[in-house]
Length: 178
Image 1: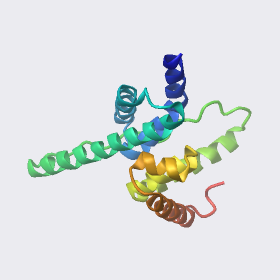
Image 2: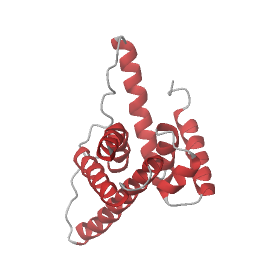
Image 3: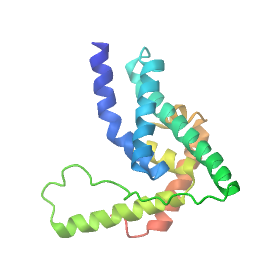
Image 4: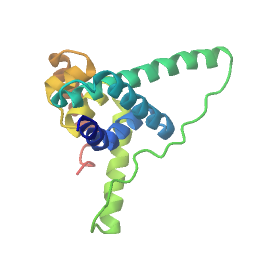
């Protein structure tokens, strides 16, 4: 019974976790690796925890994987610069198409795609912590408490980063975002 609950939980968050990882690393393969690593570590360490704690704990593991990814890349970048190698350009296409567009017209779909492209761009412009707090709170619907657990910080820090992220996004997106 516990295995089925874990399978259901992981399948229910995999798309959101992938999008969050993609926003953070801007590469599809790296995003998939981050999510897979986070899921494996989560199952190994936290599967015995109560189910109501799983979401916050999973996102804490994912956030740690994302931070580790950025640290590794920073070190690699220093070495590349030192060795005078050019780093590869990011050829990711951004957000993937949302599931089942339904009965939308091509025009409305184009407008929505443009809005998501702009949102993706603007999310990349704010700090990593603000971006992650925003995604956890606004997209994943985590509470301030659960976001603090996931980010391994205080609730006050979550509130501050979320407020700043929303303020920045409102300023940057203006009327673009529906």
